[in-house]
Length: 196
Image (cartoon, rainbow, N blue to C red):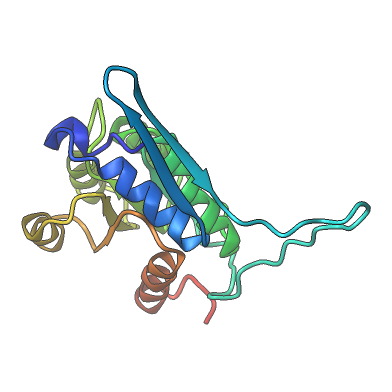
């Protein structure tokens, strides 16, 4: 479950909503059985194609946008499930992103390497995404990365914050591959780093 937003906004059951969204996209469903005083059991059912013995599985890269190994991407996210989802989508699109667990780790990564795009979670321990992004944008480095705010909270105020502060774009969890593709295409138009 995603706890990145509930730490700040309380028990809003956002994690279950995100899980349901991901399962729906894979053609599955979630059921729940709850007993007073005992707890709840959640069951996830996802359809898979049966593979015959000896049959090889060939993974085809997503062709939504062309891959370019020269485009460097950093994913800043403290939740391991969200890390897996975002990184998995980016790899399917042909990229090889780095990962930082919080804003402070992100600053260390940015100091050591130049990134073209940073996907930045807003609510993290040690240093949140807003503070980390401000520091990255104010750094003396000539190259300024495109910073994309990533959050589970649907809030007009938060979107306004992203638009008016140090963020270049905004996407909402659960992350869709099409959202990442769209942001990377827009970055391509501005920076010319991704092959068209």
